[in-house]
Length: 123
Image 1 (cartoon, rainbow, N blue to C red):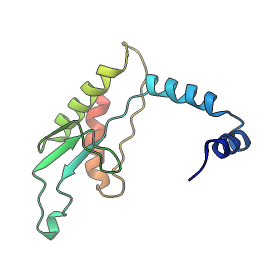
Image 2: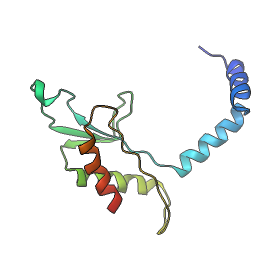
Image 3: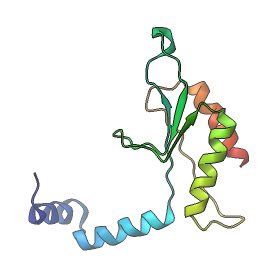
Image 4: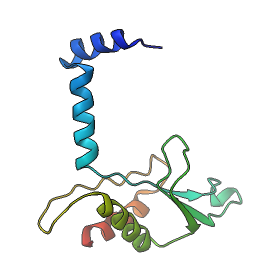
């Protein structure tokens, strides 16, 4: 476990910042950027007898529970609900530019990720 004083030294040496400054930067990032995750359940591949019957919105990358669980949705429906949720938290206006990162963490075929990204592009 890294002690607070050690962390302060590491941040100062590697990044040239203090933990206070890093805290300010993290708060600013949190206010300006949105993040939404999506997961299919269960994580048993169809070729091993599994079939996804549920999906989960907002699940944490380490397995933390999401904010909504329900029946499997289409790529268009997933993109729509994810966009709506993020827009509730971000004060975007017409003409604002956004960046979208669609990442399957190695478990989703690129073709399926392209379907999702295609819909985000038009929202």
